[in-house]
Image (cartoon, rainbow, N blue to C red; front, side, top):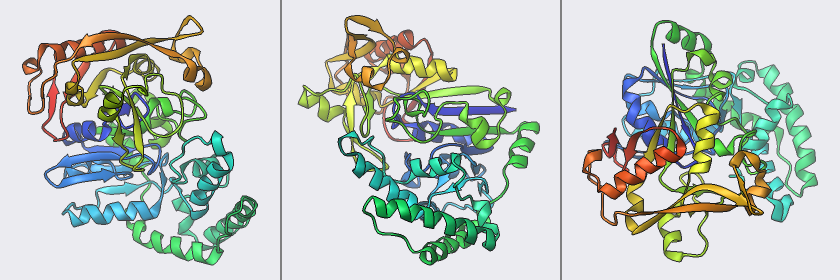
Length: 421
């Protein structure tokens, strides 16, 4: 029995897709167990460059079976677009992509409400991706959700969907939106179901049977640990649990079956949307441009800042991380000096991430130490010992501050640009 979880230790966009693609060839199954298409994993391999939002990133290994668990909310249009693009690249999905009938479906009213809620909040908007993720999870826990299993009985679907469209139209019109047509929504989604039905299968016996027979599972977390509904910077978070424990509810893996947890950490910090980010750089245009990025899912600019080891340390503790996968070390080659956040101060007092709510964290001042940069191009280096000494020392200092071993270092987008330690 072997279950490895790969999760992000920051606010998402850590490079989980690269880590998963690195490991997946050694596994029998890869699985998504939380989130939805608000997460994006970028994969660069011999097939091309892919931005995957729902299909597990292990899909590029032909012997690997890919599972989408009941803890994932699914936009069928996005899923079918991914399926078609993968098939166009020559990836065979027949019998290899399996979707839980327990997974909830993102409906048109979820996406419409997501945008209307954000607009109504004005300056208090939380920075949602407007993909309908939050409203779908809200319906799930308020007994209003629609699952793929509902589509198996047209009468059940008809009754449940009619009720939801009627309810949601009241809210939509109250917020100034145009009401949805029930028949149009039903027919569109029945069309999606016809195409997705061949992939739908109850996953519980597959997972349990695989565990009993000693097969290997690689579980792919979406989003980052600090976007967790309970442990993240609420309310600037996502709609699902993003720490390791979500694998139990989202896929049906018992906690005692989890054998390894790998935390993916970017060598600096980025965040998309609203919410506190203590190490965000706002006063140095050159550094801002180097560390800012374009988000794979939304196309929005990621806010950039120095590495916050207080956040990574917390994430490592709350999920019990065994090793770190450090990504994008090559980006820091631009700097002669690099700052590392070792903790916070608030109102003159030393503070930890877990001491502060989001609004206090927004006022907290990062405590930095400065280390020497290597200021040379390290792309193409494939052995850790061949890195400049300053780059090695940076990685070693991260280990010391977080208290977790860095097992892998990535210094480029290519599959082979990973150094195992």
